[in-house]
Length: 168
Length: 424
Image (cartoon, rainbow over all chains, first blue to last red; front, side, top):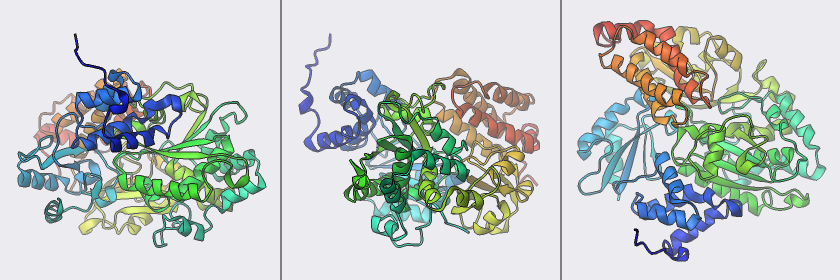
């Protein structure tokens, strides 16, 4: 038997997160609050340091009046949701064809060496994590990577160093 | 004749701003249609006349798609824009969103007027944060100027438009998966029929068009369908945005007439890097079968020419490979992609893409077996045409294309357990 006490929906999340989710809910027909689930998961993930806990997913389900399983389905289907802790800076490197033939391998190798981690891992200090991603639609600037919301293109190991040193 | 349609404001400073778009006659077409109350059928006829075909990759005639909607049927209808740009090698819609978002908005409102829809969504892939912000900013400007909202310019026509952000899933570029995704579900494609024109977003009649297709509409209506059609060649009306990348000097997006020789496009893109030889070209995104370089140099960039060479123009994503590339390695990476991105719904695709990847990967890593090439042909053939959506075909076609043109490289890998390229 679960002893979880049902939470008051209006008390879920902090006011900023709630108002941001509400802004998304307003984009869809009133009977389709569920349409805001992708945005809601992104917003709570950002607010939680970049990853989703089961509790947060349950809260999103309650807030949007959805079965929890339907939220888990979405959270596990799309690649931008993280179900484990990630680094403060999540470094996503594209290795798809255009990047691959533009020497993305060198960028990956350089990052792995510099940070001491491989794809799917987080540095011990929690500052960085590395993720291999599929084509991000910036092949004209291959090889490329994304950190946070920002794209970085035409990478060389030297440029990567400069970018990392410029991060907070 | 370049940058005549979707990129026509690219030379302006901060071309994404409303005032800049208007300085080139932006929203004039919408004003004209709304004040003159142009009959919607006339708009659809003009789009049909233009020869515009779906720029996302499928190449379905846009005007015909619009005519499938029963305009006078009661109830809500939707216009949905597919900005889930994810076909490897494609990066053109990103530029439309970043540099000319207002033309897309105008195109979507005009599409809504033509089919009798009063609401629209633009589905932007989740990684495109900068393009998404540009688009949101443009929506804000358009709303304030009265181009979005209720009773547009006093015409009695309402149109509301919002952006929806994806979260990383190639499959959502498939139109019915995209609709599922807007509805807040996993992006798994629906059976068709019913087609979205009858049962689309929230079960309502819906048209879904690619970003480039919709952004082309204002110019088609302003200058006429015939003008657009005449830019291109037979069966391939208009100009097209080509995203060209790979082993070239000046990769980028070029808006040029359909039917332009590939050799000219390559020249615009600065030619081959380091003076290397062109080995092969993937002409329409990674799903399009590869074409050997010498053959490609003789082709023009239009639907019929590329189809005639056994491939497809797709999204106009051209990946140029030089002679230092091992084709087994290239296919290994592409097969991994389709395996990663299969939504898991249909068995032939879910299991088959795994088979393709594992077999290509073992050939690449020197573990290939003599029977593997026939096995690849067999598995690819068993996926093609046996799935709900085209992702299965998209995974099978590059395999078949590679084996057709570069079988000897695969055989060499199996025989010598190493690469033919650079093997001396």
